[in-house]
Length: 288
Ligand SMILES: [Zn+2]
Ligand SMILES: [Zn+2]
Image 1 (tube, rainbow, N blue to C red):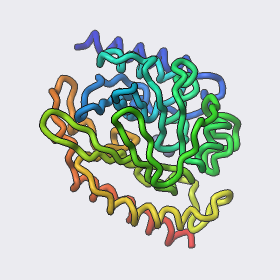
Image 2: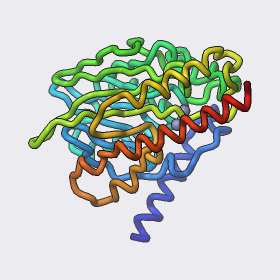
Image 3: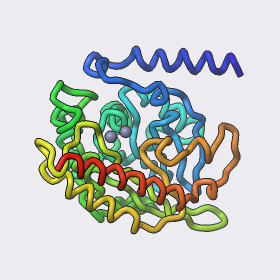
Image 4: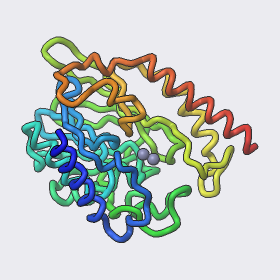
């Protein structure tokens, strides 16, 4: 056990030192690069991310879909996780992201280059992806924060992403970024079908001003829309961009077997949304 921990720490160290000069000034949470045993969530949906930065793998009859990548350099760990589960990294055909911040799209360029997968993102986050986050209204202004990459398809609210037997619906949930999105889809196992909601939770960055932020005049309106729209989504399984946002480590411990019901958590989702709404009301009151 102790040996394993040392190996993990060494591995995290390698990760940090492998970041490019552009990313070195960014503050990196150690849980963002800490290893996490990959596992099957439900049906053909798997967790392949780091301890806190969620990456989801969906297997289809025509290849793999990967949602989110973690920070730059995380592709090595994600690749190992995908192979541990018995899949081929080169079978990734579609790359998706919940929003274009460096902690979720840092390895997109590397994975796109290695696999030739088609990268799809909401049209309003595509400019951030293309300039490595330089133009981000809150975090940007200091040059690229991750290797820039161009999207192959620009998404809009309610678009459908199709591959083989899978269909994923895009739900535009702006605020956290202009093009932040959640994904809604069904997966199946031998027992039943599960409606899965990968929610981009509308957390508010420190520099956001309400009702408008410089470079993002509709930010207040966008948060209000998202806080109203998200609770209307119906689902069985709730997931998010960060493992901590949906209490993943309480629901799944290393070595746990297959247990989709562990991720049924309407109550947890409702509580998280109520907290975010409270935060929004407090912050928008204070800055108006
Ligand atoms: Zn973010
Ligand atoms: Zn994040």
